Image (cartoon, rainbow, N blue to C red; front, side, top):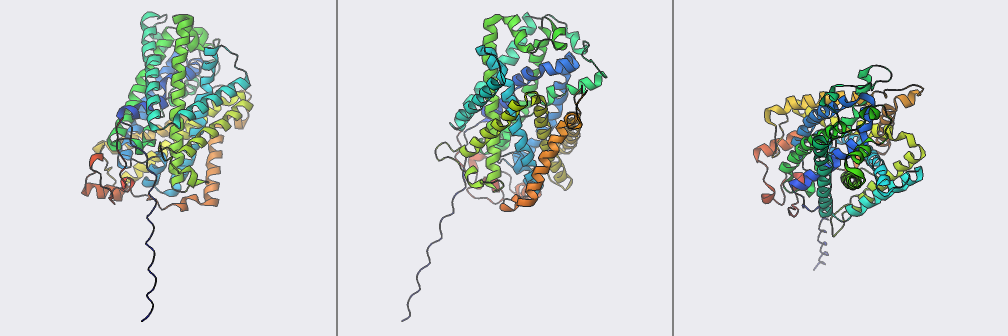
Length: 520
């Protein structure tokens, strides 16, 4: 009798993909986007720039950019409703266009987020110095910036629930610092007429007023991004396909209202507005608050402002770490395996968070070496973010032309196509304004004059070179360019709610393994 061949060992069970915990509801998601957008931080940081370049009429950039970014948020809402996947820009670009396109978009977005974190952190340093009463030497600025980044990392590594709690605290700090204080100053401390918002107050020193007004565009353009962070944490949000689009829209609308309340209140309550426009007062917000509320009141305001700044840095770090995780999960980065690992207890990408803290520290060293470079660093961050936004908007329009009808739980219906076109035209105009040189370019070299475009071109060239040499886009078989196919499948079987998700459903590849849904 022949020997019986040995039995083959049973195949090993596949290792389940790392899963986040769904612990964020609409309020927590909106709070995250709102604190990332941070109207208080933007107004405090860029009020001097707006007033010295264009005077009080610079406030109109908040209205112009707010309306334009609302169009972008509506387009994003339809995309994230069909693809509620962690990482935002990267997975959306991949599913709407392809892996190479997505890699480049994510690379630029990653670099821009790193620089954005640095900018917000650096803008917070003078408020720390004012609160604790020390002189901001170059070394002190660096140490304070590093301390803020480490503090944000400490809170982030505590888990998603702590992120949601601090985001809500930052939200209330923003409301107190912009809406409540702005209204108080407007009602009880008003020194100027509403007519100043149509008066340049001799803000144009050289050249035409149009040039100065365009230079002040950063007041609005720097403020109105951050709403996309709601989509960066999609796999941590309960009923993401419905709640994230709502959170994005709320972020834009309430962010704009809050910023207008603060801007109006600060300007109309300024005891010497002309001195601010002339550039004679370096920190006008603190000076206005101190003149209106006294020493004790200004200290309270500084605490509120710093809470908002810290929450903003925290939200930015969280968004960057989720992008790194999403990128690494598809094998697109060096050291992808450790960067795509979640902790066993808190279910967070701790390694990605550490990188999201260290990279901005490196840029802080650049600002330390070149102290006057912060405005240019900020401008690069903004144009990089806007380029990535428009890459997603363009990819969505391309799919619509091919017949795509978004099939998520949230839809614009027939209005989707005209809104998509309008969002693209707005984005192109915004990038053109950002690329313009500063109002005063006297004595600047070509590279300094066009520093924003030079920086963007450098990042694009570096990313393209790495992409061509290393071909990172070949390391993943994650679906790409499948928007039409997924939409057709979902139209045949409408998307279920989270409470009825199947364990495995080929029509919903991004939600094939059901995580625990707990709403906070």
